[in-house]
Length: 418
Image (cartoon, rainbow, N blue to C red; front, side, top):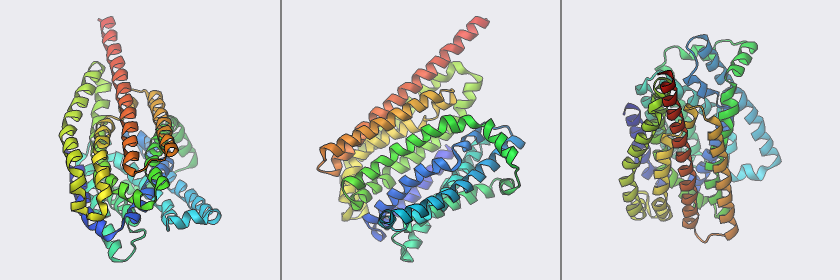
């Protein structure tokens, strides 16, 4: 409840400022921002190659300190490489850079900042300092809101939302560092190459097993805004961006907050009482389905009228897309909250199989949509909903089967011992 309250407050702040932002920024600016976020979400997977996940299980002391140093240095190194890559793109394909109006210029620095914030966010969860985790989420939301409003006033409308996103992550990172003692000294303290190499090898399974799946997941999510951009234009992509900011992203962040606690508690249960895993998973699943049902129904019925009323008449299309987006948010809320189940029970290969299947299936669905040439963005949204429902239903089935197998194996082992 502590982590959830922080995420809810953070999203209330983000949603509360949206009516002002939709009047200060046009749909094209939102579309550009959504494309930027989609690129960043893919790029940030490369920042530390998922080594930050190992923070949850690393032993305290030198092992954890070396892992933090390694992850921090990977964030800096990959952002420098990204700087040269973006420069090459700007030199060889100037049309792409100009169409995004400076977005690529901020991407390398944004990668480092996003990677560091992502790394730091696992520390409060590791220490079960859920209040610090909640404060960091609120700080990030406040930072983004203040930054977006400030950039609009300063006439940086073209990339104002991009700058605000980066500023929010900086504020969130500072919040965690201030609450973690002298952690910053550990991050910048010297580290020899042999020690970093040994640390990378020690936790290589996080890179080899979880990195590909995370990359496929980010690519699957990036398909949608790029599809709206390619099938229609940047303005329609901006209308979809409001759906992301108003529904999908807040629900996803709240689900991630639940997931962080679920992962911590589920990991403890996996170490202490494997027999109860499947029962705990199913109970959590039922709770999540029950909690999200009523808001989903209300959102489907009211969005088309409420969204233009709140954000302005220019966002009528976003209202129609929101009505279709609520069932998508419902499925994402339930599935994201338990998304680490297969990783916890050491079924990383099954998790990767699902990620690969999801990516290929989503790509095929949108390839079909491109082929049939849909007449309206609402049609694209419906197909997106169908792809989401099938993909996440399959993941939940995998999770249930895996936890059931672990529980049955634990029961059989105890009977043999008895």
